[in-house]
Image 1 (tube, helix red, strand yellow):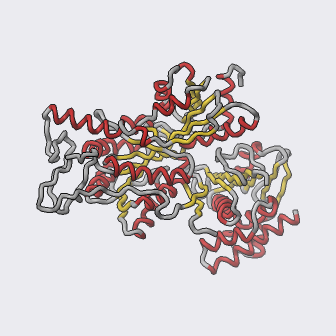
Image 2 (image 1 turned 30 degrees about the vertical axis):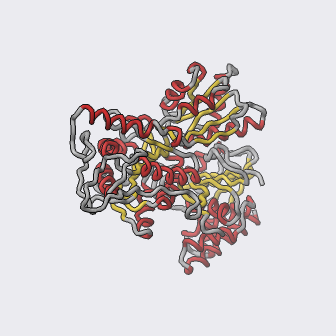
Image 3 (image 1 turned 135 degrees about the horizontal axis):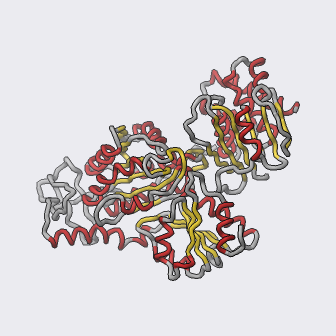
Length: 382
Length: 179
């Protein structure tokens, strides 16, 4: 038996991915269906010299990881819908102050306390626009444990590369389900480490002065440099400024650093798209049902394909447009009232051929649900 | 092998979910198969109705829930009443007559195994009832070898508990062979 083969929950796959990526600090407050992430990290982090802390609530957890990240460590918190709502203000602070961090939301039914132990994908737009003000954000997801692991590592890499919070939008089915996970060997997946300033102690360090490549080297807070961090618009020193040029420049920078790199951050998988006249677009656990349908229907000669999105934000519109260009119909499979469907409609040349196959009752959408909707779209009746 | 879809159902505290996880884990780690395990998370703790789904296959498994089980295990009357209609035609229903009175004919092979009584008579500890049930399931389905289950148990349990579990697994296998 190989010791790198595990049979675990998706939440544990996320934990192992985070440890692999170099997570050293986790602050959280348990909430179903994300609790196993906190539970497992309380055991795993001390084994790798990291710190685990259960805070008094989700707001404090988010603030704690922001502070810890500034001291030079890779950080993460995990929650579900109600906790994700509470984290939004501090999430915006991390966007503004450009703090690398990873925020996991294992989605359950909402709004409010909603349907705690059941699956939903209703927080896609909350991830995008949950915090106030114009901004850009990165959000990623996955449908199986190997991908949960890889996407979690990628989330840390993107957080460090672009100095940004990254949201991992998993869901109850993927979080709680158990399946095989093969832990990659060290070095198999490249890691991005913190970019430290080369400015020595005693010399002025400008925390928000970009290098030529646009990246902002960091100095461990509490170390050799004194600098200011604020949620207000700020100059290159990190001090508040309402100078219109500074405000405009910073907001442009915050949005452009993400959106100009949409293609680089776009993770997706495609199945049988070459000759597909119907393209399913899906993500997270819904994509498992969609893939089941594609495999079954292909065996019976139907030209069905799947585009599985792993990066939801920034939305990879150009890729969706290209992959759906030859399809007679595009069917978005998701467990909400059409949050990604709207993006797909906006991305393709002919939004009239985009349809929604969804389920919003806390039950995983089944292959039969999808097949019935496909038959209706094709005018064949259920 | 044929893809096998199993639903384990019973009451919180019977070890139904533990047995489901053991089976799926042994299939993946020891037998090199693919397996997916899910369970219903409700407000149920000890005493509430529980259900866990396991799919075992050689190929990849995408949709992880079981809609029509080939094998349905019901360890309480409530579970039986709720789940017997979903069994796949020609499938197998496994119950313990101590807990379940079969009232309706279903299109399935029905195996009523006196697992609880055998465990109490021969071991005297109800805690290994679920392992006995698992022994019966693996014998009736031929899905995995008993040694694979024992290896999974070795990872979890102190050595002092191994004999009792080995014995319970064997009782389940024997009951299945006699059925």
